[in-house]
Length: 117
Image 1 (cartoon, helix red, strand yellow):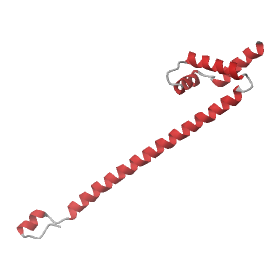
Image 2 (spheres, one colour; image 1 turned 135 degrees about the vertical axis):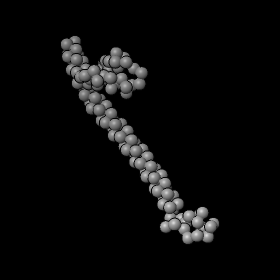
Image 3 (spheres, rainbow, N blue to C red; image 1 turned 45 degrees about the horizontal axis):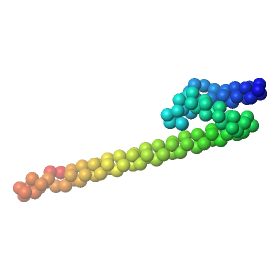
Image 4 (spheres, rainbow, N blue to C red; image 1 turned 180 degrees about the vertical axis):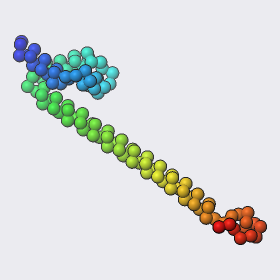
């Protein structure tokens, strides 16, 4: 019984050594609280045993990193597209402003005078 207790303690220390990590895990599992996550972790430990836990923790870490990278890529793409749209809007505003300034004055045309330049 002692190796299981020591293994369980080490697993909890390795798996969730700080409250922030436990809170991050609770965010992963949506509405589960810290106690519920610890219960799930204990059940996983009992089902898979102490030999599989480090491998599972590594795989979980890799999975979380992949999710973080994917979300950062999505954020980057969204920001890039928003910047492109903003640049296109500014360009069209400048273009219309420039065209309106370069067109001859309509009032001067009607009066038969030379437009102001």
